[in-house]
Length: 250
Image (tube, rainbow, N blue to C red; front, side):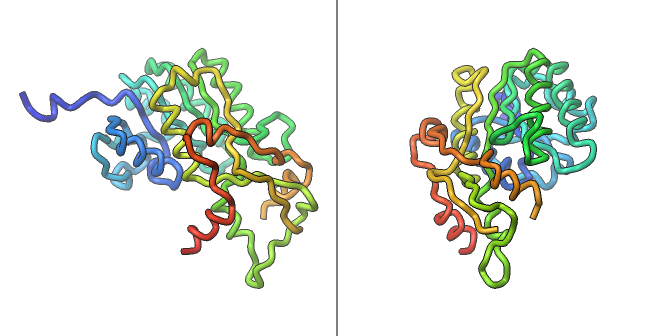
C-alpha cells in the first residue's frame, strides 16, 4: 500500500492560509498533527505544512468551493478581502459548504457585529453570521476585537496616533491569541457548536484622536469591554497590546 493511500483524509479545511491569521491557524493545526485542506486562490502560495493539502478555490466560485470541501467536516472561514461584493462572496462560500456536506463552520467575525454597528465592516460580519445560522450548519463565531498588530499602522511619523476616537476604548487582541483560540475550537468543534466568543486583549485602552468608522466605533464605546474567552480557550493569558507592538516592531 502506498504512503499516500495511508495518509489520513483531512476533515478540516482552513481558508486564508496565505494571510497572517489563516497561516497562523494552519501552522498550529499542523503542529498538533491535524490533517487539513488549505483553500486558496493561489495554492502555490499556501504554506507547505505536514499533513496539509493545498486546494484551489475562491470564495465567489461556488462550484470550486463545493468540490474542494467534499469530505470536509469543519471549515475555518476567515472573511474575504474588502470589496463591494464581499458579503455576496461570504454567502456563496457558506452555500457551497452546505452543499458539500460540511457540518460545522468556525467563522472569524467581529466584536460587536450588528446590523447597525458603527464600524461598517462589522455589519457585513453580522449578515454573514445570520446567513450561516440560516444555512443549518453548526457554527462557532470568533468575534475578534481590532487586531493589536494594526495599531502601529495608526501611528504618525512623530509617534502620535491622531483620529476621532475621543475617549473611547478598544480591547485590541493579538493575532497569535486568536489563532490559539481558533486551533482549540477546531480541535474539538462539537464542544463549541452554537457559541460565539468575544476575543479581546487583557485590557481596554483609549486612543487619542484611518478609517473614519474605526475611530468612531471606538469613540462610541462599541469596542470597549474585556472578555475571558482567550484565556478560557487557550489556557494562557491574553497578550497585552504593548507586547504585541514590541514583537511587531522587532
